[in-house]
Image 1 (cartoon, rainbow, N blue to C red):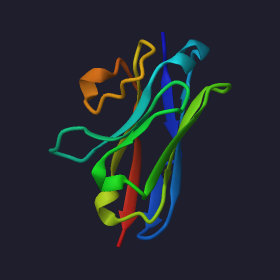
Image 2 (image 1 turned 180 degrees about the vertical axis):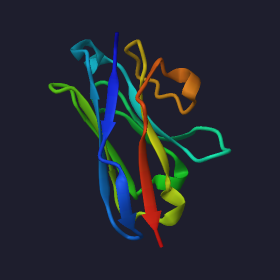
Image 3 (image 1 turned 90 degrees about the vertical axis):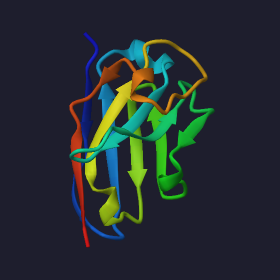
Image 4 (image 1 turned 60 degrees about the horizontal axis):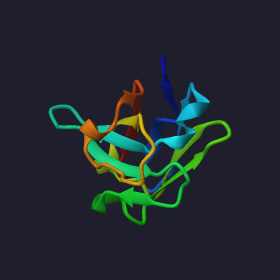
Length: 126
């Protein structure tokens, strides 16, 4: 069974940086698009960023463009989310997600992904 394991969350002051990592248990998923979502209590899961299997295409939510950077290493295989200039409104549980098939389409909907990690908490203090 495919497993995604996130790490790198924590508490940071506003203006600081964090890098989230998501390791996939199966190397075959080096061919699938992967993404990051976030969720706060009482709200729907929100798309943050996504990346195709070959890193040629990336997609970001408007709210994080220029602030967050997604990347991946298919050898490990791991996907990263570098978060800079963090703001209190970035506080959320961050989830890693993977699609099941190779495609150049990056979905911004949770329904476009088949596998999910358990989430990692990011808290930005003001």
